[in-house]
Image (cartoon, rainbow, N blue to C red; front, top):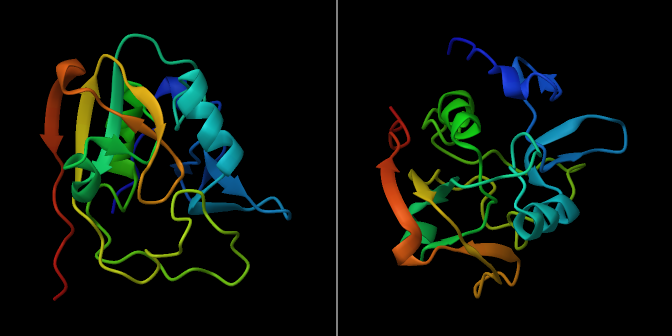
Length: 171
């Protein structure tokens, strides 16, 4: 998989293995970042203060959400919004969203509980299909299933939906 060029607005973010570390990613006590694990405080702050989950900067008029099919059906996003340019980068750079991974990675023993998967339901399970949703606003809520911060997308604010390539099937 070729390295995705990093857009100028993301060049202030740390990188690991050529990938931008999203602002909401957990940083371990030893300084390493744990891709796929979400910092609970940053998650909450991003939803409440309308910050981009990738760059950590203030959002303005257009919000883009990456949503699994199960969340899309409810119009509830368990991950904060992104700027359009940060979303474009994520769709090509993030192996999970881009469909390059068929399964979630197994939880490492030193990884903290992730605010994005509070019940530990994803490690080792089949990857989900993702969509991007463009919206002009959202309501901060608690996901009724996980009781974690989330964004509820009012249908009247929905501008566009884009299906992202489904996970590559196992061979």
